[in-house]
Image 1 (cartoon, rainbow, N blue to C red):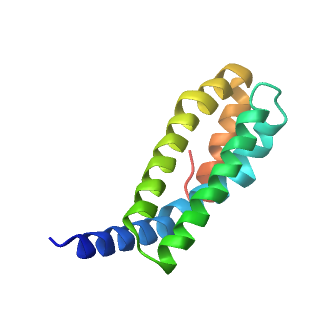
Image 2: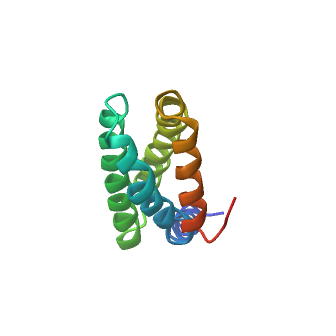
Length: 119
């Protein structure tokens, strides 16, 4: 496969995935999860950092939409990978240590409800 074709295919995958999954995921985190955790001293700095990463990821997607480029795609993949690791190994771990079970359950239910599901 020629590099230009591979870049175009990856671009299409990134744009499709961002619109079908990531945009809603970010909105859910920003309206349900992050506001709760921004009020907790231990998670406030990380929430701020993750919000900034949401913005940078969206900016990269916009740039990829305008001009498919292997460097932009690589930057997107790297930032997204780091972001997910930060959430899983940092934010969610600290969230479990900092919040009572009932509050965690409430957040989980709200996240599921935002996606049209229930517990």
